[in-house]
Image 1 (spheres, rainbow, N blue to C red):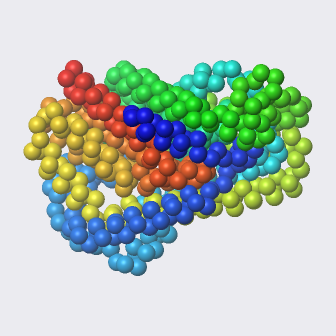
Image 2 (cartoon, one colour):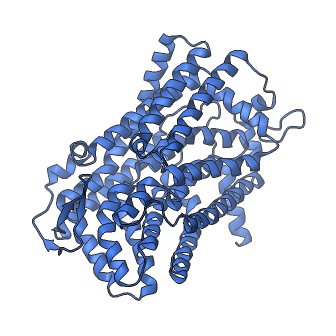
Image 3 (cartoon, one colour):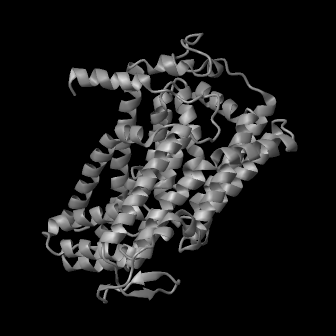
Length: 504
């Protein structure tokens, strides 16, 4: 990087505003919310135009033993009647609730509202601030080791149990922790949101992408995890290096002094590191808050353990979001009451938190309407048919990368990993086998394409909500994460090509 570019980068980093570390509760930044709505509305318009241009078509469908609708790979694609009326397009953010997958959208909305209410109560009771100060005080001399552990934790949550939406309530905690440690908001997002997305894509035994895709491809569930584990380690190393680079660039740009001003302190007393908030440096135990934090952490830990067991207990896999919501609700109620808050105060603060998170509902509905419009117009199969046609003209070495690209393309329209697997795998896996590409490698390419773009595409509501909670615009997120995304794309493409070469 040229000297002028480096200076400009430092200037941008030092200009970053950290959120109020004193207020780690959940609320959507107005600026982020408006910019997200504008982008989503433009995408809705583009989608409507596509429904007018792309002809409707469909592959024949079959129903599996579980009642899922799959593409019949032995059937032929045919043109059919389609299209989407203007009024249906205009009302699509609300009509999506009654369409296929509407129950999941409603569950996500309820989940976020519950989490928003609990977080506000935790913040008002001083529990989150106390917990953050305790963590910062404890690890103030081991900041980078803590960063490595947090990134690993989030990647494992995504890779082992397929957690993604469930990690949203933890993102503001990590962001506030990063700011208290003297870093910026983006560092906290890299440690949490980006990490869980990377882990979800690496998919050592992700039940929602690798598990479903392997079942559809006729493979034993979670087979071939050795090579995926190698990929996980390499991706973890890349993300950790990138996050460290960003954090240290922020420090060199004067970020530590600025971040230290959040809360109360600039240069701290008693020889503590610059940038560590004065409240954390002067931390002393409070019996009531200590009891409240202990209750919160223990109940939340029990929920995480229960989620981890879902890797081995299939019956739990469909209820991880419910488990997280119930555990946060139980942890929030127990800890706030233990801190001395009355039931009336808890109810008031809970309602305020729900109100603060309400803007996220509109973002979820608008993002979900993209898929709804394309399904109603019946153009998704047409796009898939065109992609399969292109695959047949390619040399073998490019086909596996093209499968990766197909998954990336369809993830823009369909955020759900399992729903996308039911659409793509029955058609792509047999086609890949014709060219001598194993179903195992095809599943890996699919998982990569599904997971990484979750933390890049504006159509993913979890990304938009997390950015809104952190007060970061989508444009700024792209500006500071695209280098990692590009490096990760190169790394994962090399993993796929190596897998092809060794016969994985």
